[in-house]
Length: 374
Image (tube, rainbow, N blue to C red; front, top):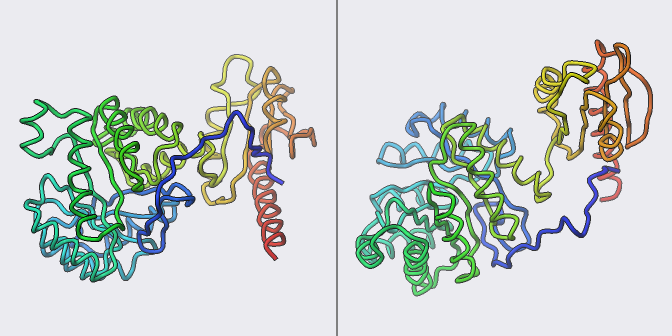
């Protein structure tokens, strides 16, 4: 049994939202919070786009969005959808006809920015296509592209303007008897995004797509997203997330899962608990963790691993993890299994041994899960 205990003081009570579907993936209600990313290939290059989607899916992405700015992109979308292992969201920029073409091509969801797409009649045509082809819709409000009348009313992008924009477009969808939609109110400013999301969470029961848009590079964007998304998720807001990084889409997926894992909202793969290292370390902690992260990427089973350089905190951390290794001996350390001291292992053989122990534990957890299901 995994040692990922649930404690009352760690509970997050999620906002109640209705459930929709993006293809086969449920979003909202009691569904797990899904993780999304977006390709950065030329969508008309089917092979390159499918390869990137597949890599993201292998990293755990539940949904992948692709940009469809022109007709060549929507023509390619049909082949991309057919070959994709996960549902595809078509990202519509300005032209409503691209949304109609994407629906015809098999997109599971259409992401539209109503501030860019034009008149209500054009939005209604997109709604008709979504109904005809079984697509859901994401209303994507962005602080950088608010409607002119709202900027004139409020003077600048602000939470109230973003919420009002979202509600105006929700009204159009609902007046056309369309309810398979989710909503996002993104900004690159953490405070603006957080306030807008809190406002829209109070105003509707629609599922919420969380994101801090244009967050930055791998390090800065990860930090900004962890702060913004983490606080909203902690408040129970959010049904699906996308971490926006100037980086490989696979990195977005990894960061998304790490945010959810840190809050106990999704459990996938090995959660490595490791010390920053200091002069007390009995082995090279930093290098060891880097190697283990790569070697254990194939493990999908939720479990925990502690890698601590000395005996100050090592034994205590190991008591709470599935597998642990604590340094401190003369060239060797203590291996912990299921929170208990098991045996000593040399530092030289430690990495291979830990990989073996983690794989064995993962197999045992999976076997127990299958047996319980039967």
